[in-house]
Image 1 (cartoon, one colour):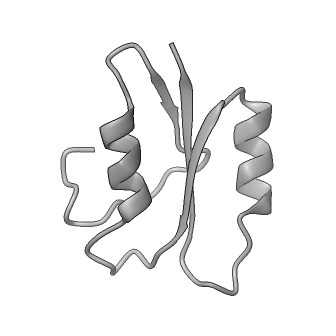
Image 2: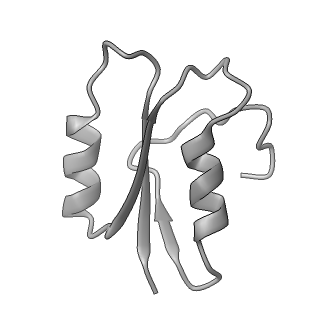
Image 3: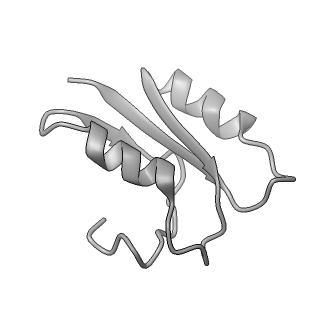
Length: 74
């Protein structure tokens, strides 16, 4: 089992450091990160995370995210 994390902020001006630190403290060994607005239809790193994970992996979002409409099954 791998603990996988996803960190996201909405704008380039925002910083991912707090989320990344939290995910590392939570034991995530693979972290996908991006700066994407909720309004953006595609989040490439979230899509990469979904391609990466296996049935026995655990996903930690660090914070409850509002997901893009292109990925409604989360």
